[in-house]
Length: 55
Image 1 (cartoon, rainbow, N blue to C red):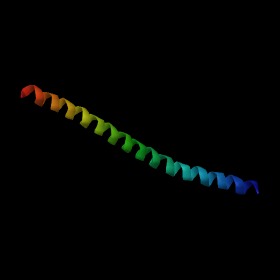
Image 2 (cartoon, rainbow, N blue to C red):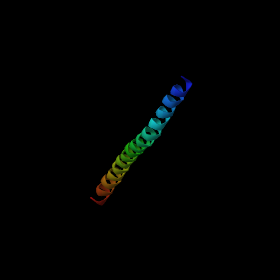
Image 3 (cartoon, rainbow, N blue to C red):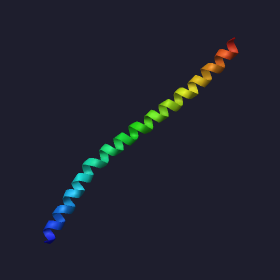
Image 4 (tube, helix red, strand yellow):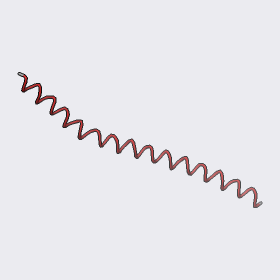
């Protein structure tokens, strides 16, 4: 009986070891995309200001 419980816990642990890295990679990719979008907004604002100064 106790061996079954240990086996089940081991299976859950192994499953978590597969899922956690995938979740972290997805989270990092989303974070990186949001950061890139913010940089693009800032660069657009700078570009617009430079265009106004040159005209």
